[in-house]
Image (cartoon, rainbow, N blue to C red; front, side, top):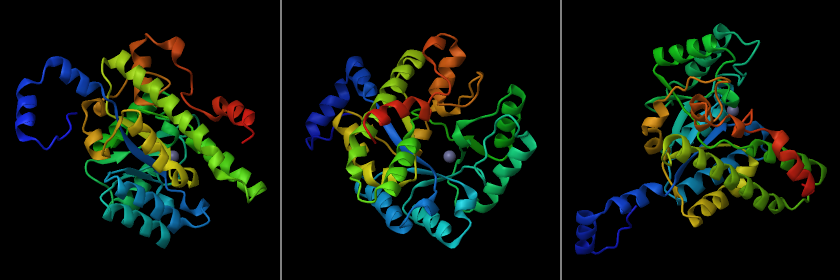
Amino acid sequence: MIQDTGNTSRRAFLAGSLSAAALRGAQARPSVAITMDDMHWMRLAQPMQVNGRILSIAGRHNLQFALFVIGQNADSDTGRAIVRGWQAAGHLIGNHTWSHRRYAAGMTFEDFSADVLRGDAVLKDSLSSPRLFRFPTLAEGDTVVKRDQMRECLRQHGYRNGHVTIDASDWYYDARLAERLKREPGFDVKRFRQPYLDHLWERAQFYDGLSRRVLGRSVPHTLLIHYNLLNSLFLEDVLGMFIQRGWRIAGAGETFQDAVFQRSPNSMPSGQSLLWALAKESGKFDSELRYPGEDDVYEKPKLDRLGL
Ligand SMILES: [Zn+2]
């Protein structure tokens, strides 16, 4: 991206002579949009303060986030106030089912689609356009038949999959932080900062590398993190880290317009990061694709070692 130099003639010169190499350079600078899931405000001691902190971070950076809301978390005065605040600030609101049950073995298409539509009934006046839906834990169905039934159901109801390209385990870092604070109320929360940033950066590098190798380009990324205490404490640092390391923080709406988000990979197990699924579909990366793509078991040894 060429910075505005404030010098018209220089800008005109650059625009007229932008070489193919410069264009490639511009495209090679990765971008990432922030998408937050669940809206578990009831787990927070001071939900409205935490909500205000998250919204003010977005506001300071002039960013549009996406919030994927569990319907039952929005079906109360506080829940509705939070969703309204996000909507008023111009963020995207997506459906994340009513109850957050996984579309996995034991969950039928009929039950799961009913849960999606129950979420839709609560959120329909708040949903942004185009309508976005995100699967709980990114589980898109344990059989091809169930996966494809749900793809058709979402299409019929005007939904697109609110795909994640960079998946991570921020929820586990948050759970460890919550446990620690319960045991030790005076615990210095800042001790989680660097391990959490390192984790996100490592995952971003992995998925961006996958994007370049599978698709030949760095797609505009959607990072999945959760609406929780951890991110209310460190989201500003997360944005700062990406910016400092040369990434651009992009708006969620702009990001979801990229053609990659219309892809429906024909791979099983379904779900995971969209890039994981596209890599799986290609059949060329199986040795590098752990399943699930992200989980607490990968992070536990690190946090144990750090005494966190
Ligand atoms: Zn979720």
